[in-house]
Length: 222
Image (cartoon, rainbow, N blue to C red; front, side, top):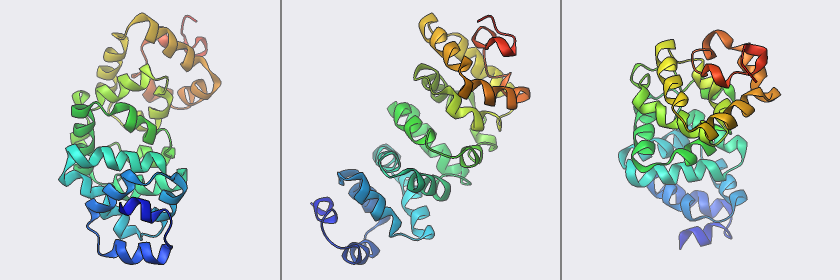
């Protein structure tokens, strides 16, 4: 009911009501606002401290709130999505761990990829580097989903922050994908938007990409 009102009442009224709303309630509200533009405007009303609190609130009730948080980040404009991720996810290992565990349990990989694809390389890179995240069981399903969706290149900024042994493990999972998926991934990696970052970060990314997927410029068979 409140979501319907949010779409028509003034920012001042929304700001006044939102001040007294629990952080989790804001996620509920965002889940039901139908206008992406209005949702973007709503996010803009909150200061950085509140944005951090709203996103991290999902970790307290991950099964219910992470789907809502991902929905919020996917619907707002790119700048707002970046702000939500930078203030709510980047730099907080426990929150990231909660998110990835929930994504794996609920099979929310498409929802997560919809968000990750919109983030700057700098923000995505800041997600890596935490000891507890260097786990193939934790990250493997997301990389496999990205390969299936033709979105593996969007994870390159994250991949270059991961330790080589983990990348080798992830590559072995990718190599086991069906032949149709592998052919599609190889075609994607041969495109200029994929080949350029592959060459740029080849020292790291060579551990991630199965050899049959490599473009000819990097020693592949295509």
